[in-house]
Image (cartoon, rainbow, N blue to C red; front, side, top):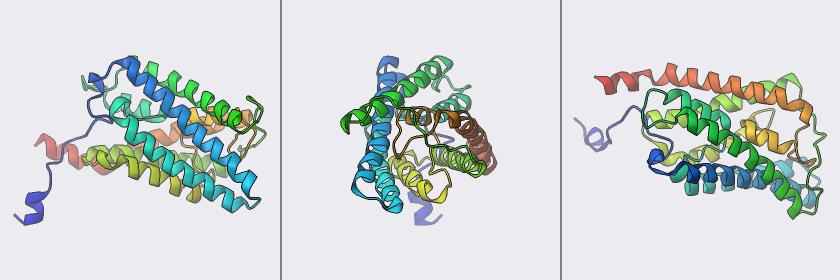
Length: 252
């Protein structure tokens, strides 16, 4: 056996998305999801407003928006991951509930039912907070139509990639890298997907409440959320297809 093989840590089937989520009271976990999602949307919307006020160049606006999101998301995952798993995303929560349905320590229906409303409320609050900080109307429905077919395809790709990344890291025992890996992926997906990678139903709903750079028209919500859910299924399918050997190795 080589020295590299000897030094390699044992690979388990999967790590939970938090250190010991079942050991943290549900109220604390729900609060973390609400506050974390609110902060994430405040970062996305606020940096979008700031960018449009500083430059008329759309490329620079997107660059500023994506960089702020990368740094903000990474910090939030690092801070709140040990509390709730730092989902901030109903698709991640649903996927975690599905994959952990046979695990007593996994996310149960009660947790899923508590996480998702908290994420949605947090996202709306974050958008309102961002508008308030920049002196905008607290609630102004977005007029930014995002209903084109190629944008919907972009959401499937963005969400599938996110789920593949998170649960792939879990399968290979590398979730400690999630703050950097997930933030980096979202930053990249801002640029390589046509939709600029919302990849999150709660954030999508929150962004409908602001008629600014990061907004999305309410009429586009159903399409985006639907494609994100489909992307979640595609992502889990890819995880099963690619990482099945990890399960077999552990069982043996």
